[in-house]
Length: 146
Image (tube, rainbow, N blue to C red):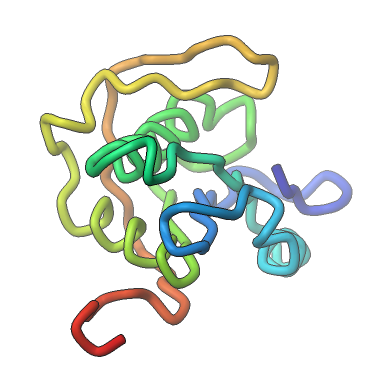
């Protein structure tokens, strides 16, 4: 989690960040510069770890990203985030995942997927995984162009 310093006026914009790494490497610390930069601008950022290949096949990773959105919305009050101002960010393959979730909210294969909370507990609340924006940095949007 990356949060603005001090006591910013709530509710804030929230961003769920999906790291890059060719869908099979990397972790939530890859986007540290983005997280810190957005937090300095007054945004709350939740950087995710998600299931990766080759052990986990599609739609595992995108389902985890959707669960991250549901988690942020479910905990919006505690986080100081507006539940109507949540977006996604992602870099490279994470940008691809952010676009997948952002343009198709409510996909049935994403429903009920739990997220591991910071305390290690599982949180599988149903909820809204729609977002109001996607910040896709150099996303894999056209795999044939790679």
